[in-house]
Image 1 (cartoon, rainbow, N blue to C red):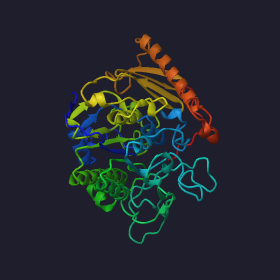
Image 2 (image 1 turned 120 degrees about the vertical axis):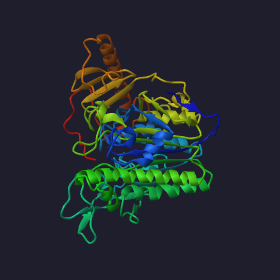
Image 3 (image 1 turned 45 degrees about the vertical axis):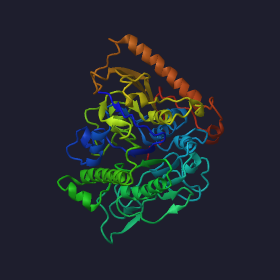
Length: 480
C-alpha cells in the first residue's frame, strides 16, 4: 500500500528524530510483541508510516548515529564501532544544514560520537588531556544539548549499587541503599556538567530537557530539530517501581528490560501530547527507530531474524521504524521497501528544498519523499553495510552477506530468516553484487582517507583504514 500525501503544505516542518538503544525488531507491540507494552509507539504505527524493512546503517551504536547526522555510511568517516573514531568536524551534518534554514537545533540523550570533556575522567574515552577525541555536539551545529558520552543505567542514571552491581542491570536502588557514581555524566551545550534532576527514570530525565527546548521554539515561532536519543533499553537495564509492577510476573531481567522500554514509550506519548496541546503536531515529523538489534544476553528479540547486535545479518540491523507527520501523511500505510538511517538527511533536504550543492560529500542515503508521496514502491539504489569483519549489500529482493571473506547470497523476500544460501543458483546476481560491494568499500576507503575534502581530523586521529571484507581486527573495542 502506498501513502496519500496531503495537499496542505508548509515549507518548514518541525523535525524530531527519536532513537532507542539496542531495541530489537520484535520488542514493540506494533511488531508483534505480546509482553512489552508500547501503546504510544503502537499508536504512531497506526497513524503514520510503519517500515517493515527499516535498517540501522550499522550493527552498533556510534556508527548508526553518524549515519543519521551525515546521510553517509559510517565507514566513510572512521566510525567503525562504538568508541571508534569521532564524527569528524569537516562532515556536513543535519543540524548544520538546518541551522542555515532558520531552525533551532537540540540534542538530548546519548551522543557517543566523541568525548564531552578533556579535563576529567568521564565515561569510556573522556579523560584529562584527550583532545584528539574531544568532539562535543556544539562542534556540529547544535544550539542546545543535554548529553552523555555513552551508556548510563536506565533508572537513576548517575548511580550504581555498591554491593550488587551487574553490568546487565539490577533492580532499582532502594531508599538509603549505598551506591557509587556510575561514571558517566550529563553535559550541556557549553561543556558544563549537569547535576540537577537526574534521579528516576532516565527517559523522563531526557524528556524533561527536550520538552522545554521544544516549547521555547514554539513560543518563538521557530522551526526546530530535536534529536532525542534514549539510552533504553541498553544495558544496564533498570526499571523503576511503577514499571517493575507492570511486569511482576516476569523474571528480574525481563522486568527491568521491558519496564525501561515502557518508560521510554510513555515519554514518547508525553512529547506527542505537548505537540498536540501547542497546536504544532500536524506539521511535525517524528521519526522513530533503534540504533541496532538487541544485545547478546538481553531479553530483547529480533523475532524471526537471524543474529543480533554486532551482526549484519537481519537481526542485527533490521529495526523498528516509524514516521508520523499528519499534515503530509494523510493516510497511514505500511511499506516493505528497504529504508535506512542514512535516508534521514537526504529526505529532509528534499522536503526543505535544500540544494544538493550544500553537501559536497558523497551521500549513501536516498530521499524517501517519493515514497511518502506514493511515487515510489521499490528502492532505486541498493544499501551497502560495513562492519569490522563483515559486509552486506541488499536491494529490494536480494542480500549479499560476508563475514571474514566468506560470502552468502539470500533472497530476502522468500527467505527473511537467511537460511538458504543461493549463490550457486543465482551466480549472476552473486557476481554482480560482489563486484558492487567491493566498489562500495573502495569508495568508503577513499572518503575515509580524506580524498573528498580536508584531512585535518583524519591526520589528528591517526586512524587506520579497516577493510570490512577482511577478518575483524582484534584491537577494536566494542564497550558502549
